[in-house]
Length: 438
Ligand code: XUL
Ligand code: CO
Image (cartoon, rainbow, N blue to C red; front, top):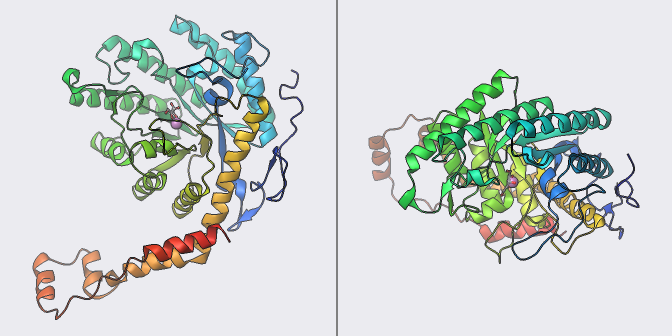
């Protein structure tokens, strides 16, 4: 196997002063942050589909990048060339994980048995590479949105036959995830939603999705999958309305159908934005429910209302993400760059520079989040803000020992209510800026 990314060496840390585009400025894998090497906080993953598959096609034009990697597209030789390219790429960047959909790995055949045979062959090859390099699988998933059969949904389809196809794909993708030692298995419900309620039985569709997820959990556990299942919430696109709208909605669904013990959230930054939330909001809601599992690290564009899947460069967002992750005690999953280089960024060099940007952004976010925590002013303010619940009547309320009558009596005896205290938003925002830009 010959080198694919010729002229691009292993990417090294050179520090913030470096002007070398093919060097890390902030990601220094072994650098200690709050007592642990950076790489332990940042299990980065390569998204097979964008990095090895997406070549720039959009609604208005065809590919701009060459991702044939020297082989004819649509062949098993190309599938293997993608494996070669992917492993060389991850090794050169020091990325330890990858994520995949079934159909990212091989060209889909008309007959599912043939597709599965191709998947067996390619995963044998991937496994060999994994053993040689130590690179691991973060999560696997089944693509249940591209094939025309899923136009009315997968778990939410009106067709029992299509539902069985979805089951077959999930079964195989779970087997592959177990074979590759994946830490997680993702459900992203791209077609699980509706275009109009006029033709949709929402209750039936949601119950059917839950039934499929239960079957997936049962089978996964049966074949030795011990990791987390993830829902990746997204409010819309491709459907007008998707059932896994946001973290709160997905968590409610999981609880309603008794799936909450096996599932966590895979939060994607730009999906949060599309739902009208911040990335930090979605992470916080997941974390406080014990369901912060993994992250799809990317970025949207505030001027565009769709899923642009850009490489993250917004340090403010990355910092608040890492603040949530640190406060939650880390991720059981990792940081998958579900991101693609912009269409005019069409060279091999751009593939590397995109990942360097993303990894540096999260490294900087980690450094700054640790500084926020060590600084203590923000956390200190929040603790102080609620301190009236630490003693007296407040402590009784928190302990669940108070009645409404008792609280009313207490209030009636108060001469004046005390001020609830200033929220100090502007002061805290200033603290944040002083830490970010010192
Ligand atoms: C789509 C998306 C998917 C999932 C996996 O918006 O994020 O790539 O991450 O199916
Ligand atoms: Co994603």
